[in-house]
Image: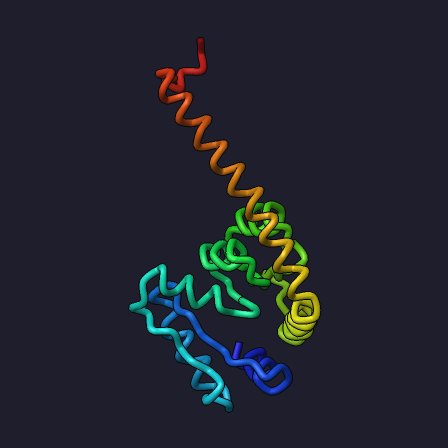
Length: 173
């Protein structure tokens, strides 16, 4: 992440914001920050911020790169072009972020065949692609979110209807 941070700062003029989503992430964010040369172009978001404040910061980003599922849900639901680094729960990431939100091409799997230089090259390519097509990707995410929200609300209505009818979940009858 330090290498990609330097790439974004030096080649794209970016300001980087590191967001720790879990206690484990705090140490990682601090370690990455210590490794970069252009510290004046990077910040670590205070861990104590509320979910609303964190989502507000995510919503102000031009590009979001993350390996945490719920943060990716936040960024894509806000229409922020996003790259997901997938190292766990592949079905969840690919099903919701990939299929439902239409971002399959922006998910990068990390597995036992991980090779750093190939990963870095792929990540830089995805960054360049997203920054080139940022408005188009953002518009697509906003449309996908509207559809996903409708589907979620419909599912909630169906569950409410089942509860109201006294459905017990007994499928033998």
